[in-house]
Image (cartoon, rainbow over all chains, first blue to last red; front, side, top):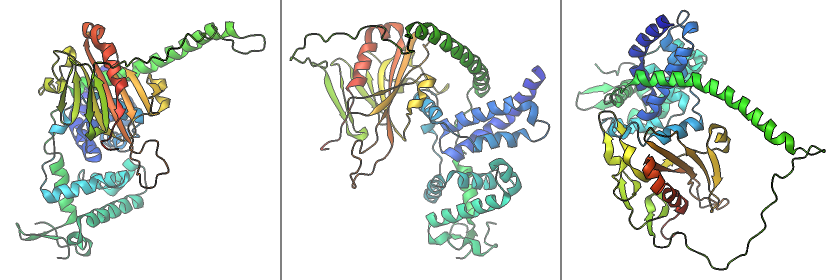
Length: 172
Length: 262
């Protein structure tokens, strides 16, 4: 038991902060991000014996976090705590004006599209791994990413509409 | 320019994917510090185990209590009898007493509510959220400890009001210790009494359905939007509770939907 705890603590220290960041990108709220990252860690800990040998625990924790089913009760409890736990409103992302437009557009995406885009472009995960995390076929992941980017382009306006037509327009 | 937006500063094309990556990286660049994350995790993991044990004990207790209370009341036909006779109606009086006589009225159009509060209490607004403070109490919002990110609210007696998006009540939550109820205007609410603080204080919270257009279904011009008025009575110590808890509940009871000119 002690060996398991020591091993898990090492995992926790390496992975909690990235998980919380992922939670923030998915929810746009640091308080909620902290909460769901903790929940993902608790579930990973409970499943530790069965997952550590056959799959990467980090992938398992991400899967729990991304596929969370936030109960209304949990939202209520978090709301209850909001007045006295985390002063999340003090941490506003610093975007330019254009970045803010994109951030708002990301927030308006359906949950799975947003998750697929973030896992693909923030976590840099291959589509096969995203498919495992989302528990969906690879084709569905491709479709989620494609449609998600399309919606973002729509929201950002005509200047971004032609982005799919070339491959050579990347930043240096 | 095909392939992306012209970035005039760098004189090169920026792909949508790169812009997306950059925005995500910026979003998490300024993050709150981790405060006791491992300690919180340990508590939460431990609490999960306790909840399972407590749930089993509670279920067994409920069955035992039900069998003790209900079985003696079952008549020969298996019907449950009344434990007591219903009270006879007392003498009625046509005189009505205003329970808020001498209290002040506070109207807050931003959250569409008004409330009553005693003359010697005060109201402070912090980041749009009103706090109704008992005499001599400091606002909770002014007691944040920026290092631990906790509110040192253990000495405060206050009623705080926050407006949240979404519907944060559901009668099925009664199984989690949340008590559902209905306000005089028909709006449902949930009440929750938190575990007592070490100081003997406690926190009582209400989540009230504060949807727009409440009760006006069928009005085509009215678009209903789910909102919740989240009201908390913060009782810092037992002494504060003895003196002010009842007043705090009266303040919450006085809250009414209010829209200027509406």
